Length: 389
Image (cartoon, rainbow, N blue to C red; front, side, top):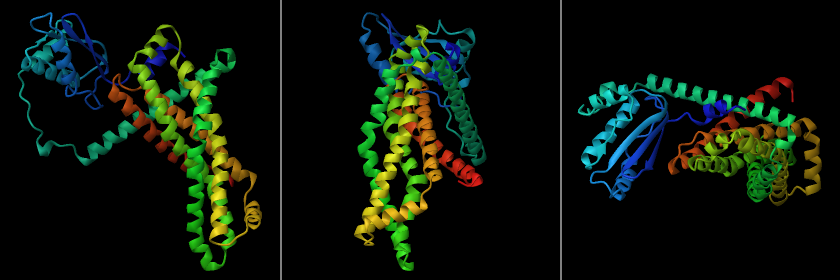
């Protein structure tokens, strides 16, 4: 994948980086500044700037130098941020050096310097329809970014298939161990308890009609078709998807991804594809493991509560399960693995270059993965119902 496409994926959000110099503190502004999007505020950076400027003892009056050369697009949100920074400098005996700013930004910032801050009139607050529209546009933008990132990963995968020697097998096997073998205990415990819960719920109804033996059908179908793959996906989304986002976001904050791009190495090839392959391979295997533990949980309840012998439970379960049921769960698990990998890596590449950005990326990755897992599950149910599976 070209470096231009990589930059399109990585550098989208507005960012602020404070760089100490000899007698000044350079404030580098980067990304796209839109008042309709989430942009940084001066609150939070003022504490960092105060402590950094205090250490610049060589100059009688420390200087804050804003630099907007990294800003690709902007509106009044950038002007408001610079206005707050200017006012803070005036209140803390620091000089605001705007000589490096473009003429338009410098003129607008100077005009806003003495403008009063007025509270928002309750009559002018955002209407419900406006809020719903903005939320819809934000969701569509996220979906477009997700689709664009998926396309970049597909192109990168095709390129690596043509050149398999360039694929990082060692990283892929390492991630397989982390998201596969090391996840067996938590997946096993949760799946066993899910099977127990399903068996207890089914027993309440089936016992009234003398159909205790059909608890085997209920637990087996629910685990194999739905709950095994879904619970595994949700567990891995919280355990591994968030970890992927935090790792890549931390690399971005340390400018390691910028170094990869500088050396002509695609971050998608180097970081994303090995993780996607690991999750796509391990999620179906973990799903089979979850199915087995869930069925074992239902069998335990059947023996302890309903007095159903394990051989009878096993024979009844075999009468209801077919190969299409198992295939359905495996297809869903494979899709969930791709979704978790895409969400974790995308949020990591989009993270802001600070500690708060790492935490936000991890949280956003987990939420995004769970959301798309539920959506894909609903879509698959419609498709499988049409196909008669």
